Picture 1 (spheres, rainbow, N blue to C red):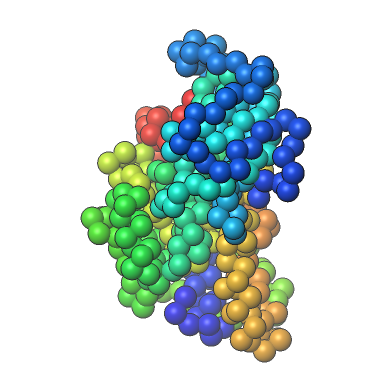
Picture 2 (tube, helix red, strand yellow):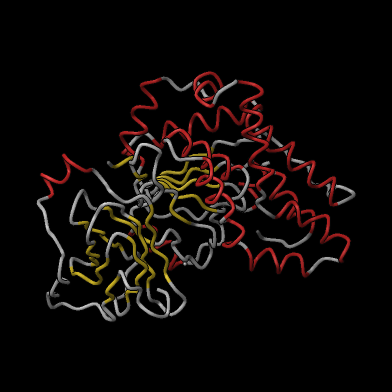
Length: 373
């Protein structure tokens, strides 16, 4: 945001309108990444990828990577039925564990983004990274992938990114995004927002504008905190019912299912509301369960905690109380969008078909482009 005034913040939001200290008993952690080959722990079993793929697929039911403040990486996973998992980074083994583990990896060389390949003794490997890109000028720029679907597949990482607007990107941020091959900047904001805070677009990327809300947005802050909450709930309903929203999300889905547009970054102003529903709709269409979708949505509160706190600190207590509901991602807001889907279309599949105009073939292409099994 380019202003911390209550009106400016409201305009931005109304627009929408985790190694533990000790190694666990099931994990062996390599304290520093090494170029020397590591001896595998006793009992580790290695199988050929071809045989395991056919028999097992990806055995991980949960896995994640988180970059810590000291530059180390926490890597955790659950893979019922396997005996060992080897973690690779930069082609070198950096940690081992059993069917479930939490490990810390330290001493890796600097990289724009550190990727980890989790290789089980049975089944196919899984490649993950920390979701956040840790950009100076876009705190909410993070990977929309790395989630497991109900049928055991995983949403690819490094393909789709959700973010806040890109007008404050530092030169180093732009260079990083170019090296990460961001090919499409998909802007969900209104024409006025785009004019007031235009994106800094990575070199070589295509810029696409598809305003969810159509034209102008209201800037007036509701009279009470309760009224702000009601306004947010209603705005999330409009993300499903408003024709301009359906057109914008239809276009986003079309770009998302085209590998030529990848990697694609999509955003609104704060990356919370319009972007929140875009991500919820994409992940749900890919088969990600509702609880996971909600966790991804609410994670925005963590990424924007510092900026939101600074904004509220500049207001009078009364204004801050009215403004706070418009700054946060709240479960009742996203649930309002899902409730509107049910009320208007009956099922989510019907929303995709009748609301967004997506065919069975469109969704098959989307899943082929974005899922790994």
